[in-house]
Length: 287
Image 1 (cartoon, rainbow, N blue to C red):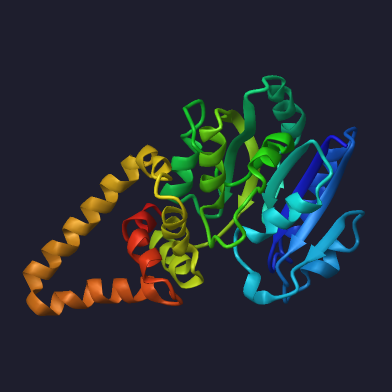
Image 2: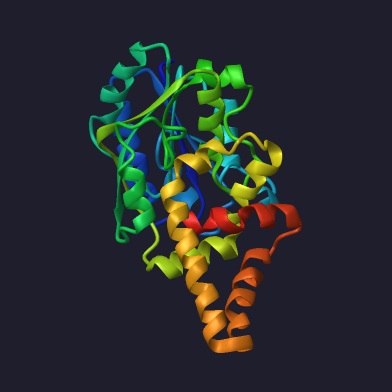
């Protein structure tokens, strides 16, 4: 089998139909399979998905639900030589798969991605990811196609304990092995994501536990700092924001401490590992 398309989903009843249809269209003419890994959706995601000739796997415990576990379960059950990881709120652009697979003729390439169009929100974070094309990469965040043989060398795709940044952690391991990751200058998918402004997006990531990921990665492997260094331009913004917070505290006196106190409180929500939270403090500001 050539291709396994792995769809990660949780409560995607509004998007899963068009996501699966796009996957089926891309799979035409290719020896392939489609795996839907569902994180115990409480809406009609599964009911809709069951209409299609795909394999559906669900978590058995909602406590295992995070950004990483779906991809890892898909990898463990995949039979294809190549793994296409996407989210259930994405629609694959027609023709991307066949174009991307051609690049794997280079045996040093482990992953291929493309531009992701985000709607309705085009947040700065998303725009920054799409500007990464044709540059030296340490990850291909947002999804992409990986060569399974090279993932097998690493023994696992995603660390199922990570709340986020699983693609960064995978990319770093692949690059350490000497493999390359590329982002093509063409659209891979349309992402029907969060309909909110930057502050709303940031708040949702904190509450969901997503912001725990960067700290977890550094806690597991202190050498895993390279992705952070590569995204240094985002940290410039983080430092500037921190400077503004200091100015507010200075200007308003003790009352100004309510702002950073509230900020830290949000970070520590649902945190059992304080060291993860400390590591994450500046990392999360890239989001």
